[in-house]
Image (cartoon, rainbow over all chains, first blue to last red; front, side):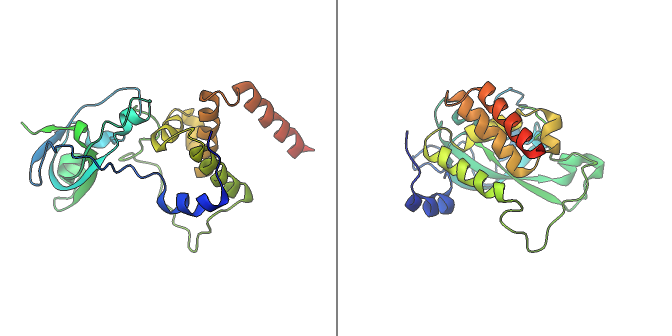
Length: 117
Length: 104
């Protein structure tokens, strides 16, 4: 078991636990693509907020390749994949309660997304 | 999992209160909690995702009433139990001992 030493502390505090992976994983989507979030209801760990499930938005940015939390939290490996920023209209998320000009941007892993039909 | 942690979009939770000149820690034990979290991370007991998941699995009543660093304590305890470093019984006995000392 590794021991934390004093000299390691500033490094750990500054960098945390970076999840970025330096691997050439192909991206399933590109900026401008319309995507629908999957209806994910597993009992394990995920980083998918409920309020975007089954909602449709637009890819606005590709952050690169990251560890997939759903597998990483359960000892099933990093399953590296792209993470994107998805833009949703407030109307899409909140219906009549959403303001017509409001937008919400949420980051999502490749496995949470499918092409909008 | 569809747990109590997933509060986005929920009504009735009240405003987000932003404290002016917020200190790093409000209590001395919170600093020790950060040290424990980093020490266990460096020891390889968890990654960030293994750290988060037990917080999602907390009893919903406890989740809503506990502070940020109390949630950290819960997951450090659970991860150390899962890693076979301590048992639930030992953790519970420690809590009871600390409570007894506090009441004296």
